[in-house]
Length: 133
Image 1: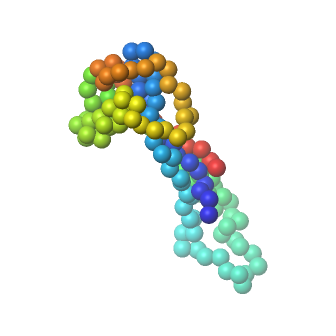
Image 2: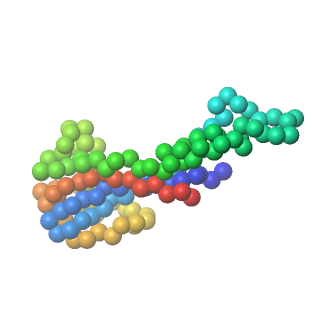
Image 3: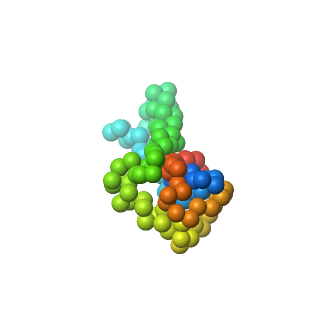
């Protein structure tokens, strides 16, 4: 069974000579079931719940919620990480990007400029995009 939507998470790295990106593996998303304790029956001719206006409104709101990306999070600014756990989690990723050790299969965003050390980084923001399949 295929997924319903894709979540693309990436780091936007602003540095002295431009902007670079580090893209994480794509996450596959699935819409949840909206059965709410109501089950359809093959014995009944009319399926009142699944054809109701209330169900359609609930389903549209669920899709809107699932396709709304999280707000961007600044993880590095003013020459330091904003939280210590961000440093532990993302410093090795940034070092791999600097040393060109990271292998990204798909490039959705093109790097502008090159940075060679963490001191050249101005700001790092974690962002995400969500797209329906």
